[in-house]
Amino acid sequence: MSLDKVSVVKIGGATLGKHNTTIEDIVELQHQSKSLVIVHGGGKLITEWLTKQGISTRFVQGERVTDKATLEVAISVLAGLVNKEIVAAINSLGGQAVGISGVDGALIQCSTKDKELGYVGTVEKVNIAPLKVLLQSGYIPVVAPVGLSSADKPSEAPQVLNINADTVAGEIAAAIGTEKLIFLTDVVGVCDHSGKLLPQLSPDKAEALMASGVVSGGMIPKIKACLRALPNTLTTCIIDGRQPHALLRNIEGHGGGTTIRAIQQR
Image (cartoon, rainbow, N blue to C red; front, top):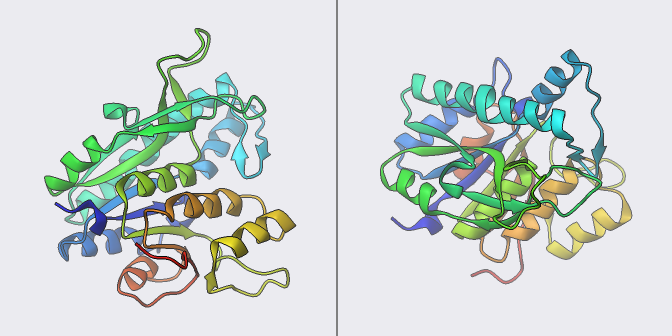
């Protein structure tokens, strides 16, 4: 199969509410023979489980600072609870999905570079072979954002690292050379300083919004992921996943949210 027809979709936990249509859309798109790779977050649930254990949470530029105790909770929630609930939901609606993490098949290989963030992985390599096998077999890969420490890791470093899900989605899109990278969020898209939605952004404008502080917090990793993917990806979108059938409408070309697109297309 041609991987350039694949769409990578990142879904956040905040967009998977009781009345959300994202899972329905994923199954419908699969029935239409669309090839998808799903990357999910789970930050809100991680924070809930950390709070239950009396562990505080801190973020730097939208990324969770991860010590050993936080890492154990993150792995359990992301690769366990959240991943299997999404896979179960897709399969129960008649779809075909397989849940994996970045550790499986050495899909995401990473290292720790930012001491301030702790055990958060910086992606060094994406091995697309496991994704290719699943896609060619008719399955939707549902990827949990934890990765395998590189072979030259320090002896005291853990073998599994937490990775920002937005970063994972961008790296997978870049490695595959996807048709689309779509972020389903709980906001309308990228907004200017007055809160007005920006439907279209160039890479330079996106960089300027981050540099000026207009874009902050959890939107920073999303925009960085879009910029990372753009050399090999036709279109990147950040859309409001709370809207009914937002994913289906976007794939069908009805837009919404913010599109970041390079001037020169491949």
